[in-house]
Length: 170
Image (cartoon, rainbow, N blue to C red; front, side, top):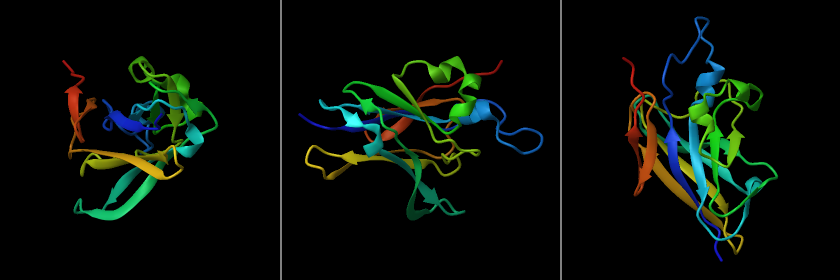
């Protein structure tokens, strides 16, 4: 029996214009920025015991050696083999979500943010933590490189998230 999570893919740079004319982030764009986490263990894990963080960088893209909470879960139970997609946007805007951002997962979590979180210019390092079967902190870490293509889904290959599909405009 094991408790294990893995960040399997992310979409840090949604396709399209990020802000309205007034400078506000578009709700549908915020819902299009997301991270997928899979329960790869053999035991259920409570969402409330999970935390998803990302790294903070300075203006020169140097790590500040600090992380910021991106999402913490609720009361649901995460079964083995299931995937949760954590969206930057708000649950109250979920009706605006594109079908491509809705499909292919068992659960949706919402960071409920008004602004983008994942770092495109510097790349980002993502961390998911949870208690293992003995109650000790366990974690999975992955990263993606600077300037991911707009609209790309980044899939896990080893320790890095790499583009596997890119939306195109003609």
